[in-house]
Structures are given as C-alpha cells and as structure tokens.
Length: 73
Image (cartoon, one colour):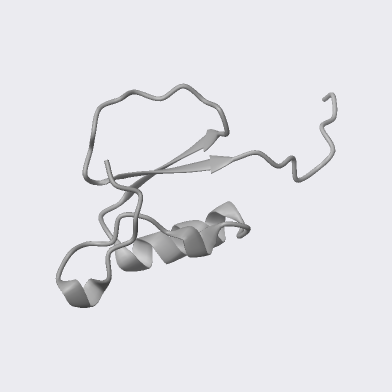
C-alpha cells in the first residue's frame, strides 16, 4: 500500500493527504472528501490495531490529541 500522493494530472487517484496534518478531524474530512468523494473515512486513535486488508475507498485518520478536559458525568 503506497503512502505517497499521486498528482491528479497524472490521471491517478490521490492516495494520501499530508496537507491535513494538524487540522481538525472535520477539516481533514472535508479536504479528503473533496479529492475522494466516495471515501469511507475512519477515525482511529494513534496506535490502534487495524486490519491488514486493503479497501480502496477506506481512508484512515489517526488522532492523538485530547481537545477538552475529560470529566465525570
């Protein structure tokens, strides 16, 4: 599985989005869906175990930042 981005002018679909690193999940989803409208975006914590199968429409976003204070209740 390639992790390099393919230029649209080459006629191939884009396979990675390094430009979304640092964006919110929602912003990243918008960018990915703009390039790949049929993407099935899956959000996972960094280090999560994932299957080794390849699904051409699946895009995994790995996140590791706590955005708000966790609270009981």
